[in-house]
Length: 425
Image (cartoon, rainbow, N blue to C red; front, side, top):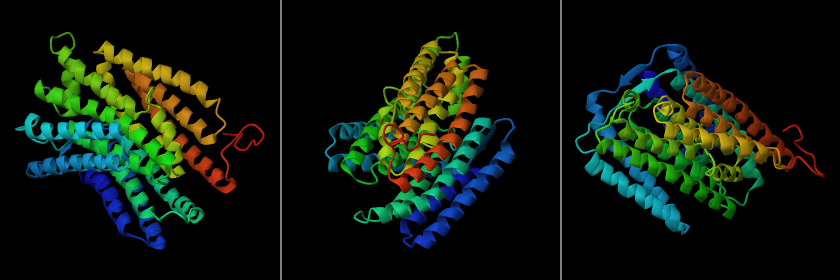
């Protein structure tokens, strides 16, 4: 349990310190130290639990009430933050969706979940270990790479206010939220961390505050809020109908409901959660938000495409995959969307002349293949999806960082036509 708490708490502490540290040298030392600690903890965690049977942990019962309140306050804070940005930039659709999320969050806490004890249960299995390694090693490595990149970025954009403390705080907060998603077994807790990743992504995409960056950031948040609302409705439906709100229990009860009258009750939240996973995983027609993320600094692109954000989507789909064998409608939806995304985005990737867009389309295509494998639901398909997740996380993070470095030095992204720069990519 101490390892899990540390993996969540260390990046939270790093995010807080990054906000207040203004000196470049101090920031570099702290970022490298925290990244090393996160990476080391994830390796120790993997050595301890890889190959072991699923294990369950829980914080002391006395902390459940406090954590429930903290979870609710974070959820409200995320909604208010999005609402404030929507009002500031006069984005009515984002404003409406943020209001819906806030109202549902308050109703869920005050009425629907009244009397339900907040579960602090954590689950550790092989998928959790693999995801922890991806987040801890790939994610923290990107944070270290960002130190030099963002220093050069600031030097080349002296007209912009130095907002690097905010940037690095968001990067580490992203890692903390991802660790929460993969460790937590409480659907309400997973949802809150899910929305924190949405907010962090929104702020990182809009980091430069250009018109293009702001437009793309709002495209991202609108599409992901649709998935977030679906997640909320799934929790509400489960609570109202007496279905388990502990995710592992929900999966077990859903699998046991096959062929019974209760199966119809489980089908609704399964479809809603699958929809939420596909929006986060940038599946068609929601893939455009991930393409828009290219306007952000390269470390943001690498983080979103490899170890966080989109991986939260496929992680949820892989966790749901045993139920796709029970509910053919959900399985068909996931396989069809994933397969079409893989097919069309593969064709689009080879037609691009912008190196980062090539990687973006190939990322979406790979995510489509992972999604389709998860939708099949058989053990072989699930393991294929997990292997693809590992390969994609490592390969895409390195490719994005290499392209970002090359682009930064030569000032171009084109790799075809009269200026064949990045032919290898």
